[in-house]
Figure 1 (cartoon, one colour):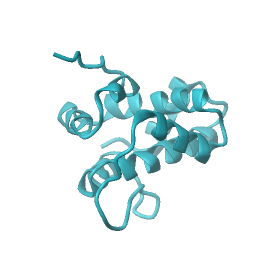
Figure 2 (cartoon, rainbow, N blue to C red):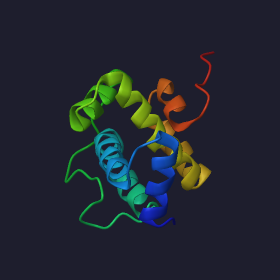
Figure 3 (tube, rainbow, N blue to C red):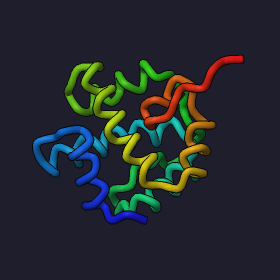
Figure 4 (cartoon, rainbow, N blue to C red):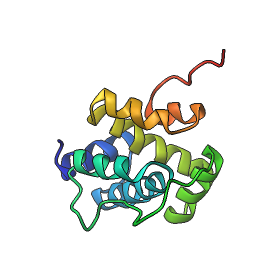
Length: 131
C-alpha cells in the first residue's frame, strides 16, 4: 500500500501538474468515474490499496457497475475537471497508469477484465489484439 501523498506526487509528476492540489483534484475525478464503471468490491479494494481515507474513497453506495464506453468515461472525467475531453484523456492516463504502477499486477488485470479492451492504454498497457 502506498501513502496517499506519495501516490499524488507520482500523479503530479506523470501528469505534469502545477501542484499537489491539482493532482488531487484530477485523481479524485478519474477514480470516482472509474468507481462507477467497476464492481463495488473492486472499487473498495482499489481505494484500500491506494490508502484513500474512508471519507474520500471513490465509491458507489449500491447497485452494479454502469456500462459506458471509453468516450463516455472521458466525457464524465471532463465534466468533473472542467477540462476538454482531450485533456481528460491525458488526465485519465496520468492517474490510471500510476494506479497500474502502484497496485499489484493481478489487481490491474482484474480491473482491465471489467473494462473494454480500448481502455488498456489508459493504464499504460498495450490494447489487446482482437482474434
